[in-house]
Length: 335
Ligand code: ATP
Ligand code: LTN
Image (cartoon, rainbow, N blue to C red; front, side):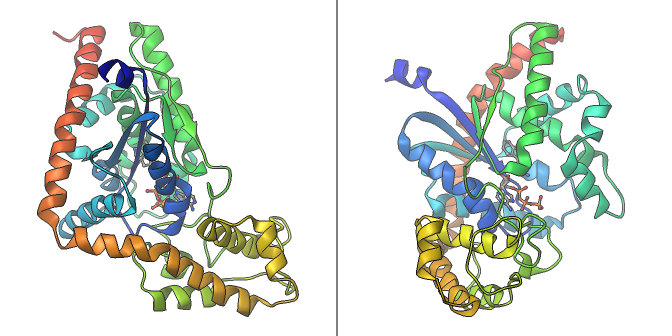
């Protein structure tokens, strides 16, 4: 058993407890995590990255609630503490520690190139150093656990590329220490676009809640948001990213929730209009989210049980994290 688990590749991923977790996060990342866990082929680690959330200002009370909400959502979608490690980033201090050390080998220019930083800093009145250094902390998250694969949405590719660069640089400078991780991206759903603007990705920090469907949105809210979702000119339900970006996005969402190929859905709606398609799409999403919403309620009503799982997870995570850190400290010459 021990031999077997040693051979398993490690998967690590996380979501920041900020804003409302939406179907983009779900279809692009979290839904995959459950599949990977269930395959039994990997050592799976899923983290609530609260230290990343505070790279933009957060209200402490709201942050506390969000951390528990995201943890409960992980459990509700099917992350099973018997099969995966689930924990809160700030409970394992090695993340911040390695993040600092990686900062000392990160060229400023690399961080300045990051598109997420450019996008997010535009929305801030005052740009904080933590937002700039966000990718080095993410690299630390990944490298601490000698991660092989990182299942994320497309927008995180650049951060994983930087993680690889830093791991290689550290290894070259101080000797083999880190596994070089690779991204794991879904073929469809890796970039769900905003419902109010199909030019930009669906985002937790979007100004309008009509941009996204949150995993915890009520059926009425989902119906309303789909009803007002932007569509394209013409009336055909046809997948064409160039000419029909909005409808293509809705078709992608439909296809992933209904687990039906897009061509089949196009056929079903031949000769039918947007209104009918949208009405059905809302029901498909409601149905797709209803089991996890029901499970979420159970965990929401039992925060002590959730916290117990998270504490146990952090203890186990610390075993690996502290091993990596001892090696790192030794390699860089700390005494
Ligand atoms: P923000 O816009 O505030 O940065 P976000 O909506 O991008 O938030 P994150 O916490 O950054 O959410 O992302 C969590 C996970 O969800 C990551 O793996 C990310 O790649 C994925 N993800 C985020 N948005 C989308 C999207 N629109 N489509 C597919 N995957 C997404
Ligand atoms: N930056 C990621 C969240 C994140 C993450 C990670 C994802 C922080 N650390 C490590 C994968 C692995 C985001 O989705 N915005």
